[in-house]
Image (cartoon, rainbow, N blue to C red):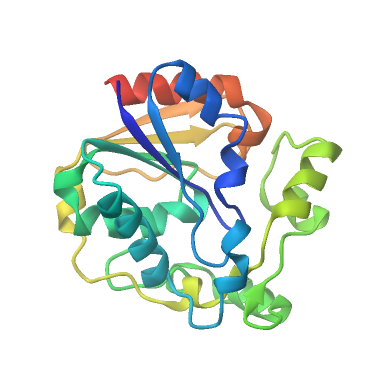
Length: 232
């Protein structure tokens, strides 16, 4: 069986995988959901100095400290950016990268560099104390298509989510991410999401019949797909 490391997207910590982790464990995998600096029970550690680089180091440190190898690194949404940087830094420990409705960083660019200026301006208007607040229902509905979240899911996400440190969107990725190209990669697109998944040579693309947060809305379906990806 596989060693699976789970990285959530913006606002999320290890708690976001609570519905998926026991299912993957039941499949026989060793599962490590991570909480990045500034989220979950590490929310108090976040600051304006928390960057994309910080989060990439969180991931490499967790993997190296635990002595993990042959890791299936699963990254959701924003988590795709620091996970890619981490995988490029320790490719010998990674057996497969699995992107879940994820952002892929561009070498030498920040996430804001790849975002339309009017969207960046709108986000910056919401920033308080160096953080982007957890999304309102209006933003969720407008920005994520058929996301599948029930009112209870939204309340759960909002109650436990933590604001995103703004530096994570402003910090440029390393100029060289080439080591990732040699790793097996799977992209799991969510059918409810707006837009098309990225197209990259050598990357398998699977479409999941779910919205943007399948670890919350479709845990059994997601666990089955992750199990299949881990075994491939």
